[in-house]
Each structure stands twice: as structure tokens, then as C-alpha cells.
Image 1: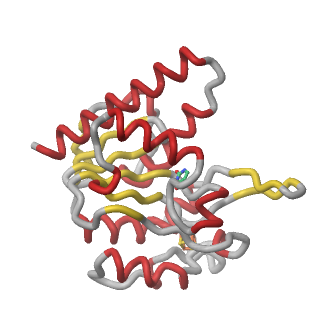
Image 2: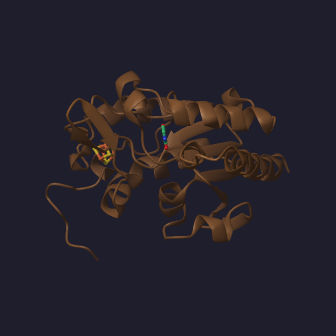
Length: 212
Ligand code: URA
Ligand code: SF4
């Protein structure tokens, strides 16, 4: 067991017991479970259907999400929308959230540069995700990228090794796939097209499993 860190007590004490998604979202702004709340503009909770069969978990809000208070409204969100559309999944029909609810970044002059959350942040924020999944009870959880996979599965995986399979772990069916941001980082058009097609295929697998 890691020693309790007084600066990072974890979210548990701020998470209301047995709450629905609206109640969780209303409680989240008060969270001081780790230090990420302080430099961020606001907490970014979830969006979409609280009765969804399919839940998608991202990493953390980005710059745009931090300013707007909504998940997946920036460039990664547009890529995700495109993938959902190509997979025939309506965004309103899914539950969309993040492993970590505050934006972690480095300040470089006027710019805020995304910084991957550490395992300690994922762990601190996990009580929110656990409560959300208990409230929504989706049939399938899609982990978008390694950070989400770590949060959902409770251990590290290599996305390339496990992606696109329906895993039966941690009491839920889980499909791990790439994060839409990883597609945005590809410079070559052919690579991008292939990466988007792979994401679409994994989303189809997940939505097929959620429908059955
Ligand atoms: N990337 C994520 O993982 N989540 C968001 O909400 C935005 C970008
Ligand atoms: Fe709480 Fe999560 Fe924000 Fe940390 S990142 S303060 S645990 S909501």
C-alpha cells in the first residue's frame, strides 16, 4: 500500500454514495482529491446518456474542455465524433467521461501544454469513475488509450496488444482502443486513415457487444 499523501487524499470523501450521474456531477466541483484542481479552470465531468449501454472513457480534459467545462469538445472530440459517426454510433446514445476530471498541463508562456496524468492522479480520481460506472451500468466500457485502460482495468496494458478485443475483467466488459489524440498526432495521411479505421472498427466491436 502506498502511504496516504495529505496533498492527494483521493476523491473518495467527495463522492456521494450511491448517487446518480447528475448528483455526482454536482458534487465534483468541490473535489480536492489531488492537486490538479488548483491550476485548472474547472472540473470537467461527463456528458451523454446516463442509461447508455456503451460508456467511453478518455484520459483527461484538454485545454478547450477545461475552458468550456465539457468533455471532448476540442480537436480530440472532433476526431472522436468522426469515428463514432463512421461506426454508426450516435454520440447522444453513449456515456462519455474521462479517467481524470481536471486538466493537467505545463505553462509555456501563454500556452498550456497537455501533460499526461500520472498513475497517482488516475488513482486519486478513480472513485469518480467507479461511481459513474456503478450509476450508469453500461454493458461495455471503451477505454480510449492507455490512461483510460489503466483506470478501467486497474493495471497497465499495451494498447496495441489488447485493442479491439472484448475483455472480461474487473466485473465489466471492456474494449481498449487508441485515444483519438493519437490519430491527430500522426503526420502521414495514410497512417491517419488507417488509425481512424482501426478506431472505428474497435468502436463497432464495442457497440456490437453492447447490443448483444
Ligand atoms: N481528451 C480526452 O481524453 N478527453 C477529453 O475530454 C478531451 C480530450
Ligand atoms: Fe478530484 Fe480528480 Fe480533480 Fe483530482 S483530478 S481534484 S481527484 S476531480
